[in-house]
Length: 368
Image (cartoon, rainbow, N blue to C red; front, side, top):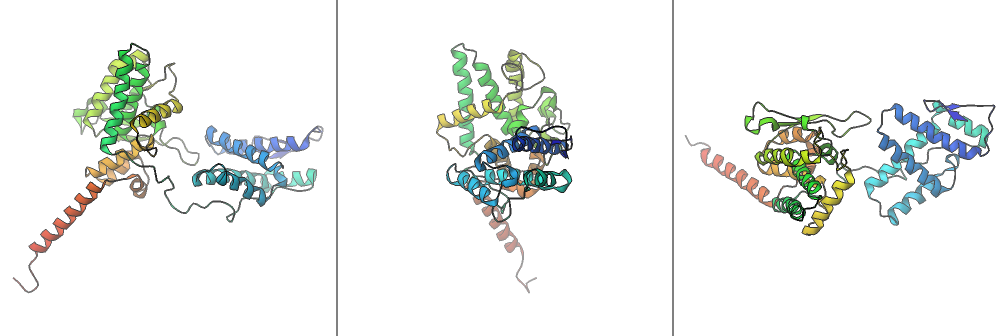
């Protein structure tokens, strides 16, 4: 058996495999890869799904046409009990396995007929509603995940700056990566960017905002690597500058930092001139957080949560904030908002004051 570029089974009568079961499994995975490529899914997504299926194959110790729901129960039960997998991780893995089973059981691809003819049985769907995790609420992030308080954020930025100054004072080369990462953290917060968005920024992505001339050439940033959805291209958006200090941060980096790294169009290149790795960003962030004794619930994405939260606390229109961060729905932006108790107290006081003022201004019924 073999597969064509569309993932369909093609019989090759002249060839006889030495290990037909192993060959059939490999051809299934190849065909599934072709099918996903035709859907324009990201290579990383396809590779992660294939790794999961191979992991399930090793655990079940059976080919797909011998899988049962019991294999699913045992595999994911082990992930939950022994490896403490998060609900979102379980659901992602189960989705990958379910999609693979959908592929090998779809009559259009011919695997059921081919397996029945060669092995005497055929694959079936083993992931059902009753043995897989259900997505029942919109937000499934760990309860520990939250935004920085303003004090925590300032301490974090101060720690990043102090690291740059410390290494520079020792006359070591490491000051430049530290300077780059400190600037990257500040830019991520200043524009509410995700990790992948900020590391892909280029110098040419900034432009003027005619309505905010005081920001000069940094009045707007064009995000070209936004979060993609369902095999679509990266989502683009424009983010307007709202913090005056962000201009100074960018100007200082472009004057003192980027030229020392060799210049180029990438705003935050690696030491070797390529794209900055996510691991490098995560490691430095985690080290600073640990040095300060901050909550493990603060991760890189907390910079984006903080951007949303702080703007809302400052009275910025929620619709403007939603457009800035590129959310399709206001409910998604609301999930990011971790407003402080002080903000809620001020909001309540303002509402009560408005209600009292209205009551005092309105004469009782019958009084003219």
